[in-house]
Image (cartoon, rainbow, N blue to C red; front, side):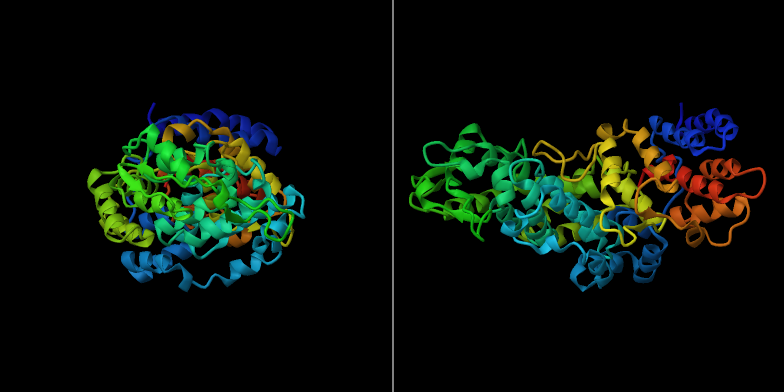
Length: 498
């Protein structure tokens, strides 16, 4: 069954049920009709064409908005990209003000251990939601998400319920648009990573190989990058003594190098000798060796192209980004510039939004008020993402949340349940003002047209728009009708892809 026919059948099958009962618990099943169409093929061929700036907005933000489109149209494709690459010049003071109640974001590890872990993780999660939804520095937030996956840490392990917040601040956010070697070095020194991958307990005579293996397999070279098991052993030896201060003092849970725990003999990594007696520099020498390896350039370029272009990007694009990695010593902004200057928006396939992306784009497109002055708004939102398999910082294995269509395409019900819950005010302290969003709309046609404009920029699939309009007929749409129509738009196939 094609995408459009699946959509039509799905909506028709539930329309009668939706109209037999005015309670949302029954009518919300209408949302499922659109969501079930996701089981069909990608709407890429049926989707209306989009301009290059629209494509760029879709790729480098957490969700298209009319405001971003106006900015992109004003600056042009390259100007808009450069605007977002120069992220520190963007005034984001309004987001900073929203984050003011979250005082633990700037706390030291020692200070954080004085709070319940539920409080520290809650502040990290809620800050993540606020930044993704409201920040003007949207490409920066996308790169924070990218590196959080790349350098994944499960918040549940060891002291990470407290100190992952520090890793997010001092590693991921500090280097998200900086230099790759600096990012990897900061990660290697991160108490959060040291505990997650057990390097904190790696000592001479008994080196722990977990971090060494993931450093090569996931962080730099890639699984096919040319290293051997013996290289894993040698790298593990190089990082012995890189550990965490476990004292009950203000330096608790900070990085230390303990020379008494370090293997001082020479090491042989990827055919390169690291001389004896190097101490702490053994680890930094290994990082430099790995970062400079051609496999790392290709691996990082491929992951960036998969995230921002498509699941199977052209080799020419990957090679161009890899060449920039090499020529700029891993400058992240330069790689992104090459990617988006070289990419062909007209040829780029659509990608399925991962659940976090879908949720945030739903909040952005509806101009939802997240928090509304309430300090705790995130628990129910996290539950929605947990049901969709994408709760932040909760992926247990070091590879991070997948960026693969086959992993996410089956998790459909949680998507339309979010849409229904958002528009039914079922997510505490998150509010959508339909009047502000839709304006003075009084007919089914005007409501569906307004949804098309403010949520899709006029690119909504005609069949989906008609189905949403017809749902509100006959008569004048009520407030409940409008809210359900918006929910249906969020659950529609067209909103799932970008």
